[in-house]
Length: 225
Image (cartoon, rainbow, N blue to C red):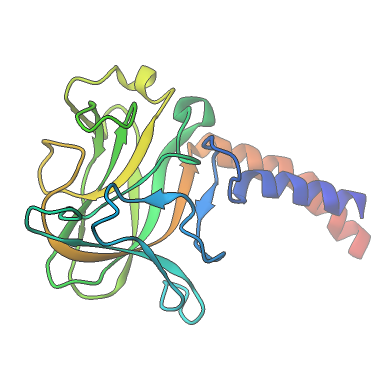
């Protein structure tokens, strides 16, 4: 039993959702607890994020977050949602090199989904954009991987160098933006389903996890035999 407990502690340390406000490899926002997991929008007057109880990529009973935008010039005109809690901190020390997300276009217009990173919450703060994931307007779920590496992100507004900037991320956004001119997203009327936001490590981290788990797995097998 003690070996089984040690294995579970090791495994959970890598893959369980985080409760504190510092990014760790393997953390995931699955929205299965019915909360928004600290995701928010900038204005209380625009469409607010909601939790949909069914219809996530896992099917019946799989909850997901839905965000919407109105287009035009008023509050909520941009398809943007941000996190200022568990997705902040030192991506370099945590060895987080990508973010995986399940995405569903619930509107009628093709979307260009990017991740945006800022050093603080100022509206005009500089930062970095990921390359875009083109999301068809077909209502299906797609699994997107956004790389976070010096050659894979785009500087916007002269931010600090990559390694310095990603040691202290101050805001993480999911946005729709065709170009690369801002970190706020384009004006558009759209709806987006979001689920299973996961921090992915460099391959070496997964290799270490696998090697560390082997002895525990072998012990469990022997005990069962």
